[in-house]
Image 1 (cartoon, rainbow, N blue to C red):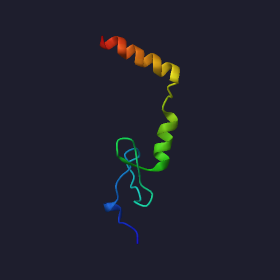
Image 2 (cartoon, rainbow, N blue to C red):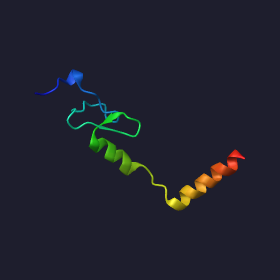
Image 3 (tube, helix red, strand yellow):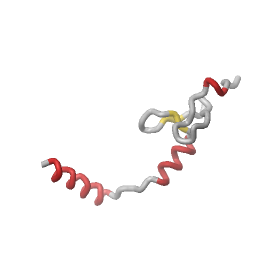
Image 4 (cartoon, rainbow, N blue to C red):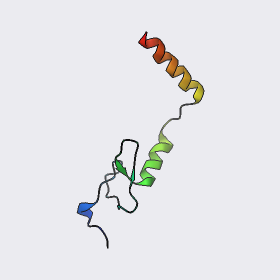
Length: 64
């Protein structure tokens, strides 16, 4: 039995219906297609541990 499109959640990334059997959620709890989510992860810049530590130190200095 298939779920009618009107009852399906929509992907937060592409705005297309997501089949409940394959639905995933992102870090904010929003419904997404797994493929859409993986594409967004691939396109986000990565932060190396060294630059992440520098960023933390910058925020620590800024708060003082």
